[in-house]
Length: 174
Image 1 (cartoon, helix red, strand yellow):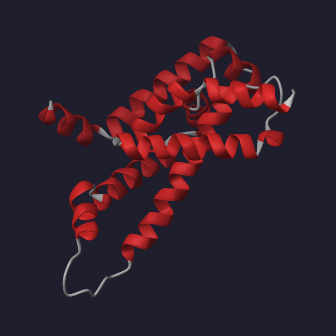
Image 2: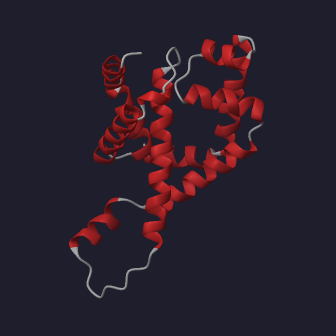
């Protein structure tokens, strides 16, 4: 695929990337930064995209990996103890705006639940989460589309049960 045409197609997915990024960050500014990082990486590494594959899924994978890597990097950065006597406004704002430790525990719980999910369920579920269509997953895994739908449904039910403590918390917030 021609480079400028692919770059244009990448940029046409910006609005769906914004929604996906907000699901990760829960903050508009951080979501916008994540979208920009994703678009830049996609354009920079356009040569790694395989023509004919799911472009949206490829972009979602880049975004997810970028978010995870940034999260890990920020986690290490936030683990450093600062021994400043007076707190400046940037430090106060950062501590007031985001509670990174809570997010860390949530991500750990999600990762643990995903690790307990059987591979025949986690594979289709992750592909669907990345933006692949049922028929694309069925073709890739060489299984019937009905099996794909069933496995994704079973994965959702398993994860919903494993992470039910967060469902109750969300219900209380709304």
